[in-house]
Amino acid sequence: AKPGAAILGVETAFVMFRMIATFAGMRFIGVPLKADFTLDGPALLVAIEREQPAVVFLAYPNNPTGNRFDADVMEEAIRRAPGLVVIDEAYFPFTDHSFMPRLLSYPNLLVMRTVSKLGLAGIRLGFLSGPAEILEQIDKVRLPYNISMLDQAVAMEVLSRGEILHEQANAIRQQRTILAQGLAAIEGVTVYPSDANFLLFRVAQAPRIFDGLRHRGILIKNLSAAHPLLADCLRVTVGTSEENQRFLDAFQDTLE
Image (cartoon, rainbow, N blue to C red; front, top):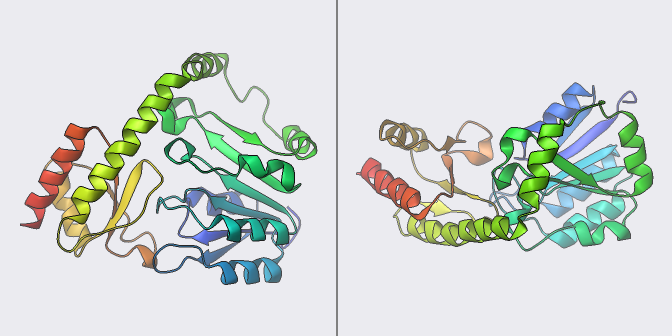
């Protein structure tokens, strides 16, 4: 990277965005989200103008909050960014929205996806879409033999069964709604909107709740110390109907 080059993202977001900046010897500029985890459009655009980042990373839906940012604000960021804008759509299977259709409209836009959220996290496989001239340059620094034949074979076999993957994603989306309603019905719990396969929620004394659930055989993610915006926040992955009910029962038991 050129001296002083920067990667810009939001906070809180996928931790790897900041780590990529560190690995590349670049500055990382984090633009705080609003208190409700929505995108602070004016602050984002000001930061882009001030910092002139080489790369802007935005997740859609966001991780670890699960919400989708305002697409109009994101498009304005793409238009104003002097460098690349990379949209991480790792959780695309669980939403109806994507920036893929906009690829032909913006010469600096790239979209990433992965098969990790389709039950294939173990093969560490994803893909990048964007203008051919940019992908050709990225391919020059791609490690040779970075995808094994076994991984390719597994991915091709699973992805050829698109109807099964679609059914699984739809089942998770349905259970997400039911789980969100169950959590929201509990006094003192704030559940945030999610287009991912998890729910972020806030509850008083979250670390104690986390420990109580763990002792009852339920392991979720404690984000309380990850960022000041996430104080008292926990994140639960959407499971089967039985798993979700077991979590809700244990959660209620922990509160009592």
